[in-house]
Length: 361
Image (tube, rainbow, N blue to C red; front, side, top):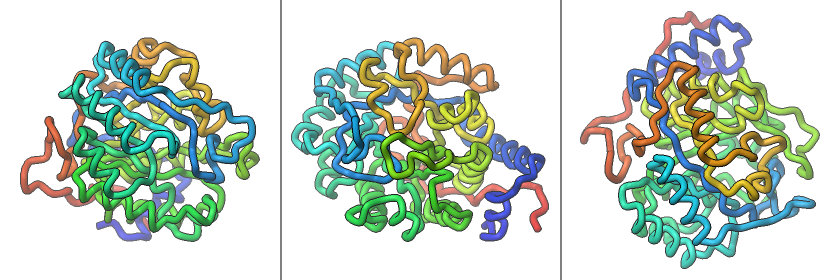
């Protein structure tokens, strides 16, 4: 087990040699667990309506000038058909916490996707809901659920969100999803206002406690019209170190090379793959709504057709020395992954965090 001091050393190091050794160790662990495959997920951003007012988010409830949209269930199903035609085996339905999408509407949608695509993975990212809602969606056919915790530090969480939004509720949702049987994704931003190295340490320790199947890590990028619009973006080096540390502390987790990293730096996603990431998420949303799902400014890949997104990302993956894998669901190796393609053998637990041969003060 790594000590807090060791982890903090790698969070704060400015030594590029140490950083590269960290990335190399993370790549080695990723290859031991998943080989060179990079799994593709088809992302469908189906609504930018949201009842929440998070201070960092470009689609927050009170955001001025946000042009709102929501895709109909029939349009979402069409996006799935496009994705299936391109070879995707996982659909990710992501949206703000939109009250229009009631349990009844979402259950009908999930059942329709499951009926047409019985062997595909259905991932939902719909925010905080009740235990009953999560359970019903799971029983309807959803396999995975993404819900970033954003920060595991109570004071920091309160500085990023209005009073009605609580870290305790976010954590309750994550543990509830785990108990129901979902493959669960948590995650956090790097470089948000008021964040300290101690906050990032707490994020990693919380992830070790939760044992999620997926972890999404991206840099903070400011969004126009939010209280943090004038704040600087997160640092790409620190973000990549957090990706690598997550891979080393949670060897079997699925780690996306996030779009936010590609927005911050043109080769950000490739650099994340070199730091231990093994998932990419090309966009299947209709082109006319992609710019409207503006969680942060200057988001990339809003103008390409879905097929072009896949082609471009496949070339980037290959150029980085990895193998694009559209044809597999790419289930997590973390024990508890449900559904066809479960890869962890019965009785196998999370192996001990990987150690790297770098002297630490």
